[in-house]
Length: 213
Image 1 (cartoon, rainbow, N blue to C red):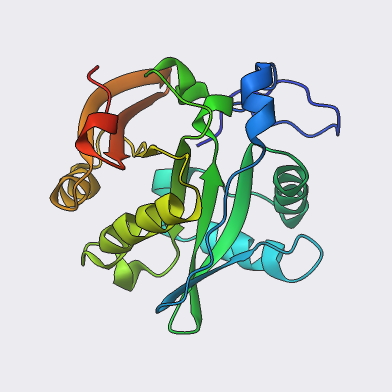
Image 2 (spheres, rainbow, N blue to C red):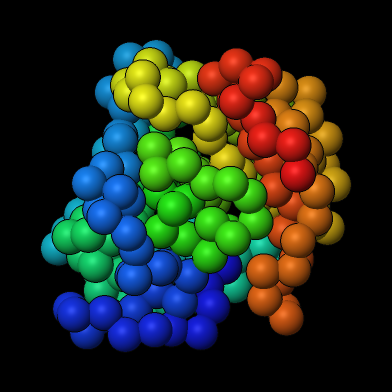
């Protein structure tokens, strides 16, 4: 998921993060994290607790090795989540279903991300990255259905947010079909890096909020 890094003041780097942003983006602040009340819940990653070790275990699982390529050490997970929590680019989160922790989520600001050049981004747009740790939940429509619910929760949490974006690997036809079934617009494929081709999916608050690319 990550690209070549660029320097940031805290010494840690996320290659896809844009650090030179305009005053309009700065004024918006960090991503909104909605308060969920259903079967799914979100909590922030705790860099000082057991979460880095849990993430090491999750991201060593074959399906996540293939799709995320983030077989990181505990130290790197600790540094990454600390950096995200301190800034306005993204929020690292653990998602649970019925009380069982099942995956990792990043809510982020596309205006601060490499995908900002792909469409007419608004500073209040929100983006989602998700890694489902439990392979038994993949391919069943559970997580793709929840992503639409999460997007609606983001709209409810901030009336200024007009669209939510997802950008799975372009080869992931299964999730692309599932997202389309749940109302996301497939805006096309893009080469964001020489080694990464993504499929941009956009869910607008209204149909008029989905840009024509």
